[in-house]
Amino acid sequence: MSNCVFDPIAVVLDWLDACRERRLSDLLDLYDSKASFRCACEGLYQGSEELTNYWSTRLERAVPYAFSLTDVAADDEGVEPGVALDYVAYDGTPVHMRFRFTMTGKIAASICSRTRKAA
Image 1 (cartoon, rainbow, N blue to C red):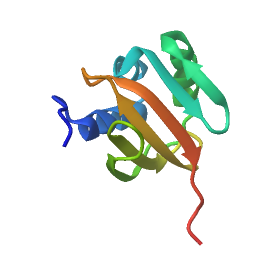
Image 2 (tube, one colour):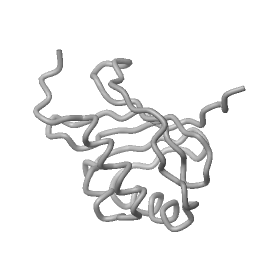
Image 3 (cartoon, helix red, strand yellow):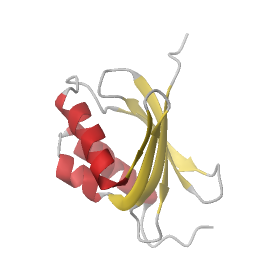
């Protein structure tokens, strides 16, 4: 059982809401200042400046139905617990993202990959 003093799923849902509502500042506030984001298609982004550059362009170019929730669940893969999120990316494609957190509830790392569409 985790000793989290925050609700990691709630943080991820706040992340999704900030994306959906194109609130870049609120989105970035959810990340630790040293956070990393690994995108399977585009590489590694680390720290506030790189995350700002990455997310600002994605939010600006988002399709109307972007950031729709498909599924969210606790993710026990890896060393520490996290959250797995399936959602619609800024460009309308399905994405799977895994989040890890700091002890204070900030996003420490996230990894995204495209998901295969159902047959």
